[in-house]
Image 1 (cartoon, helix red, strand yellow):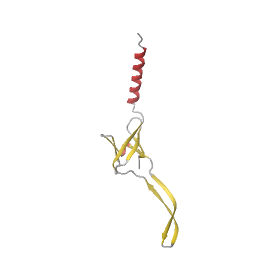
Image 2 (cartoon, one colour):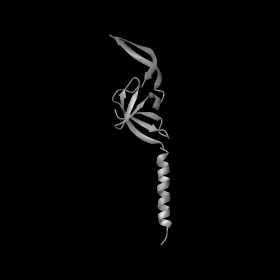
Image 3 (tube, one colour):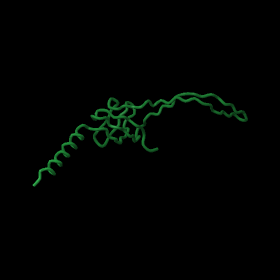
Image 4 (cartoon, helix red, strand yellow):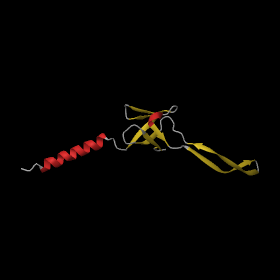
Length: 112
Protein backbone atom coordinates (compact mmCIF):
# COMPACT_ATOMS: atom_id res chain seq x y z
CA UNK A 1 0.00 0.00 0.00
CA UNK A 2 1.44 3.35 -1.12
CA UNK A 3 1.52 6.45 1.05
CA UNK A 4 2.03 8.67 -2.02
CA UNK A 5 -1.68 9.52 -2.68
CA UNK A 6 -2.20 10.52 0.96
CA UNK A 7 0.99 12.61 0.92
CA UNK A 8 -0.09 14.41 -2.27
CA UNK A 9 -3.53 15.22 -0.79
CA UNK A 10 -1.93 16.47 2.44
CA UNK A 11 0.43 18.75 0.49
CA UNK A 12 -2.53 20.11 -1.54
CA UNK A 13 -4.46 20.89 1.65
CA UNK A 14 -1.44 22.66 3.18
CA UNK A 15 -0.91 24.73 0.02
CA UNK A 16 -4.59 25.77 -0.18
CA UNK A 17 -4.59 26.69 3.49
CA UNK A 18 -1.45 28.83 3.06
CA UNK A 19 -2.99 30.74 0.13
CA UNK A 20 -6.26 31.31 1.99
CA UNK A 21 -4.49 32.55 5.13
CA UNK A 22 -2.49 35.13 3.11
CA UNK A 23 -5.79 36.78 2.09
CA UNK A 24 -5.04 37.27 -1.62
CA UNK A 25 -6.67 40.01 -3.70
CA UNK A 26 -10.41 39.45 -3.99
CA UNK A 27 -13.24 41.25 -5.79
CA UNK A 28 -16.16 42.12 -3.51
CA UNK A 29 -19.44 44.05 -3.69
CA UNK A 30 -20.48 46.66 -1.14
CA UNK A 31 -23.16 49.28 -0.47
CA UNK A 32 -22.64 52.93 0.45
CA UNK A 33 -24.35 53.44 3.80
CA UNK A 34 -22.94 56.90 4.60
CA UNK A 35 -21.68 59.68 2.31
CA UNK A 36 -19.74 62.01 4.59
CA UNK A 37 -17.54 60.55 5.88
CA UNK A 38 -17.79 57.72 3.36
CA UNK A 39 -18.74 54.33 4.80
CA UNK A 40 -19.33 51.12 2.83
CA UNK A 41 -20.90 47.90 4.13
CA UNK A 42 -19.69 44.50 2.93
CA UNK A 43 -22.04 41.66 3.76
CA UNK A 44 -23.93 41.86 7.04
CA UNK A 45 -21.19 42.69 9.54
CA UNK A 46 -18.18 44.37 7.89
CA UNK A 47 -18.19 48.18 7.73
CA UNK A 48 -15.39 50.06 5.94
CA UNK A 49 -14.59 53.65 6.84
CA UNK A 50 -12.54 56.13 4.80
CA UNK A 51 -9.32 54.88 6.43
CA UNK A 52 -9.85 51.44 4.82
CA UNK A 53 -10.69 52.72 1.33
CA UNK A 54 -8.40 53.67 -1.55
CA UNK A 55 -10.23 55.91 -4.03
CA UNK A 56 -9.45 56.88 -7.61
CA UNK A 57 -9.25 60.61 -8.36
CA UNK A 58 -12.91 61.31 -8.99
CA UNK A 59 -12.54 64.81 -10.43
CA UNK A 60 -12.66 65.07 -14.23
CA UNK A 61 -11.88 68.47 -15.80
CA UNK A 62 -13.75 69.44 -18.97
CA UNK A 63 -13.80 72.26 -21.54
CA UNK A 64 -16.16 72.89 -24.42
CA UNK A 65 -18.86 75.15 -25.82
CA UNK A 66 -22.57 75.44 -25.18
CA UNK A 67 -25.25 76.99 -27.33
CA UNK A 68 -27.45 79.45 -25.49
CA UNK A 69 -30.77 80.39 -27.07
CA UNK A 70 -32.74 83.44 -26.02
CA UNK A 71 -35.71 83.96 -28.30
CA UNK A 72 -34.37 84.10 -31.86
CA UNK A 73 -30.83 84.82 -30.70
CA UNK A 74 -28.31 81.92 -30.43
CA UNK A 75 -24.81 82.30 -29.11
CA UNK A 76 -21.98 79.81 -28.52
CA UNK A 77 -20.32 80.29 -25.15
CA UNK A 78 -17.16 78.66 -23.83
CA UNK A 79 -17.68 76.51 -20.73
CA UNK A 80 -15.28 74.70 -18.44
CA UNK A 81 -15.36 73.12 -15.04
CA UNK A 82 -14.86 69.96 -13.03
CA UNK A 83 -17.19 66.98 -12.80
CA UNK A 84 -17.09 65.36 -9.37
CA UNK A 85 -18.18 61.75 -9.55
CA UNK A 86 -18.93 61.08 -5.89
CA UNK A 87 -20.63 58.06 -4.39
CA UNK A 88 -24.15 58.46 -3.04
CA UNK A 89 -26.11 56.76 -0.27
CA UNK A 90 -27.40 53.41 -1.53
CA UNK A 91 -24.90 53.06 -4.40
CA UNK A 92 -23.73 49.49 -4.99
CA UNK A 93 -19.97 49.49 -5.60
CA UNK A 94 -17.27 47.07 -6.75
CA UNK A 95 -14.14 46.87 -4.62
CA UNK A 96 -10.86 44.95 -4.67
CA UNK A 97 -9.51 43.77 -1.34
CA UNK A 98 -5.76 44.39 -1.28
CA UNK A 99 -3.60 41.44 -0.27
CA UNK A 100 -3.62 41.18 3.50
CA UNK A 101 -7.20 42.43 3.77
CA UNK A 102 -6.58 45.81 5.44
CA UNK A 103 -7.42 48.10 2.48
CA UNK A 104 -9.98 48.06 -0.33
CA UNK A 105 -9.73 49.81 -3.72
CA UNK A 106 -13.08 51.29 -4.72
CA UNK A 107 -13.45 50.58 -8.45
CA UNK A 108 -16.78 52.35 -8.92
CA UNK A 109 -20.54 52.02 -9.09
CA UNK A 110 -22.26 48.91 -10.40
CA UNK A 111 -25.42 49.30 -12.48
CA UNK A 112 -27.27 52.46 -13.36
